[in-house]
Length: 360
Image 1: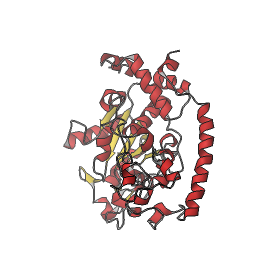
Image 2: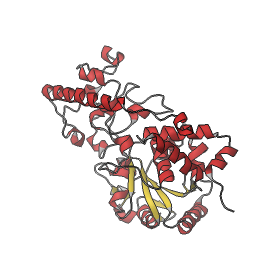
Image 3: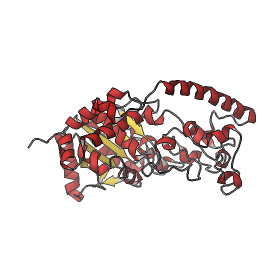
Image 4: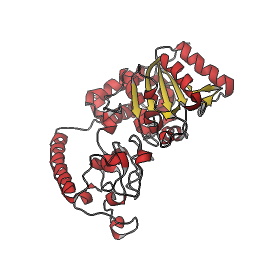
């Protein structure tokens, strides 16, 4: 029997047209798309007939799956899991064992060339891939097989994007990123340990609506979410510019919300949308909760570690290019003022997309 369009399915579940338009308007705004894109996204997603998605969990901790299940406005089960046909995902599917593997094989066969392949977890190459296997087969063999028929690959989490913690020195399992194995497919990386839920669902919705991946940066990350650093949008940034830094996590400066740079915050060199999108339904994020950014959405963040040492001290790859002197900080502050002036001028001509825009 032919599947009904998504908009009909959502209506039967109590999702109103206005609520659906609001969701699409929010996605369009988050991804810096023009107002007309919100309506186009609503029309495309509403008419879609649930593309097949195969989700392969490899050498990981299930944190990425835990994160995406906490997506809000709408919830993952209320929209995305109804917008797609999630044909294989070990943690979330009802089937197990050989039945689960048969479902994956059938999805590949029946949707060859059309399905989205989602991967979380690194791919271990050591011992001929024996460090992580599913149904007696190595992760790398399953990845190569599934990638052949994929229209595109979405890597969720730092492990699948860059190798993550399993890739950290001394990397005993020979863990690598998906892009180190697959070279002939379009790949989008959504790093983070774990990634922000609405970033993952936003990329999926963009692909469903437009049939293509969003604009990516040099590391194949969506520019809409990874185009700026944590530092660029941090609400503690004014204290950084004023030279006001907390010296300990419980001193007077920390209680006043001063900058956590000297306590090891990696915000200046970490690209992500945590400061604007936040976590737990937009409730908070690490820096707002009083802890510095760990840089988890950057390559080799674990080896670069030194979580409680400031970037002005040697701290591996994350320290590259950051001025360590007072003069360097002063220059950075001057550049910040200039950049803010440019952004203020740009924002003056930008208008947030609203539901009313889409209903006109």
